[in-house]
Amino acid sequence: MTQLTRSISVFTHSRRGLAAAATAAIAALALTGCGSEQSGGGAQGEQTGSAVSTRSSPQPSPEQAAFTALFDTFEKACPAPGTPAQRPGGGNAGTKRPETIAPGERPPADPIEPAPPTGPEAELNARDWCVSGHHEQRVIEALQKLADPTPAKVRTTLNGLGYTDDLIHALKQDGETTRFYLDLRESGGRLCESVLAAGKVSDIAPCVAAPTGPFKVTAENRP
Image 1 (cartoon, rainbow, N blue to C red):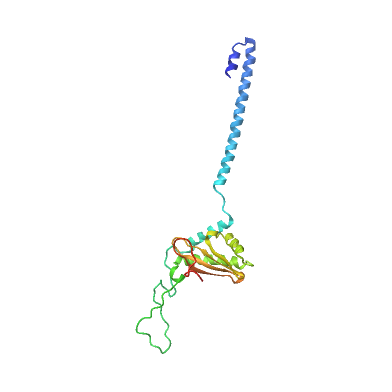
Image 2 (cartoon, rainbow, N blue to C red; image 1 turned 45 degrees about the vertical axis):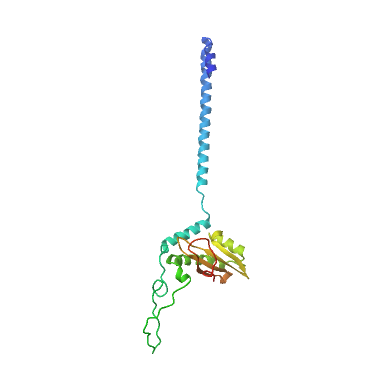
């Protein structure tokens, strides 16, 4: 633009109007071009921002959503973590149970101390027992529909329910059935599930895991 200005200064008076018009036209074209680039850049920026926004908040899969909804159910339907469980007999662990006396027998002079509970009955808290029921129902319903329950098919079924591989342990074939454990510990709980995948006769039962550390199959949680 500087060179163009200097060349205009040596034009004759009759040609200055034409040169001025040309200069104005060039300036208009330059402004139009800048406007187009800015407009295009703005659109591209909006598209990029939209794409980044989409990537930064991925939608969960239906399986993940179902598993998250299950834990939301726990929050509404189950006691808080650490709540002591009510043991059979109407009290907490260690509560004395009334003994039935046969007709004609005399009650003993000393109170009868019931045997202390063991296994899941002794170790699982109220929340463990509650969430166990939710897990058991959904797992059994899925396994009962599974024909030829090989370990591979069982794993795929469990993954579809939202149980990731790190929650599935000791998955192995046992004749025509498959056995495995689910590690369902949360917030200091000790819940695990011992599961038999056997089609319509599938079975599941709560078991006890160490409160912390990696999940291990022990005599305490082995069926």
